[in-house]
Length: 124
Image (cartoon, rainbow, N blue to C red; front, side, top):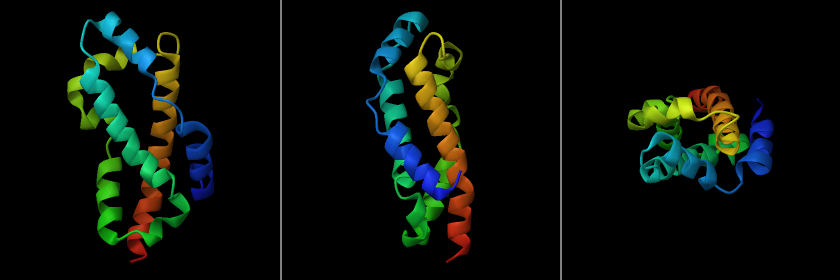
């Protein structure tokens, strides 16, 4: 994805309401509290969205911001939060379609941002 495509994806697909209904389904299906999962996922997505919203302007950020962003985005959600791994198999296109699709989009954008962040570091 180009920086322009990332920003377009942010505007068209990432700026949507959080899929709480699918999280409630996970709570019932897995018999676990999903409050922490929802909060952690929301924060994780916010980090990705922050860089996605300004993908064409990454070089305007400080080197420290770029480095921290690269380190944060180097791991997927379940690597950051292994305590939620029990929910991974329950998140499917059939059972939690909104959550599954949002996770797919954020993962696609996250992996597309990594080389851009690396290049931005080299520009300093």
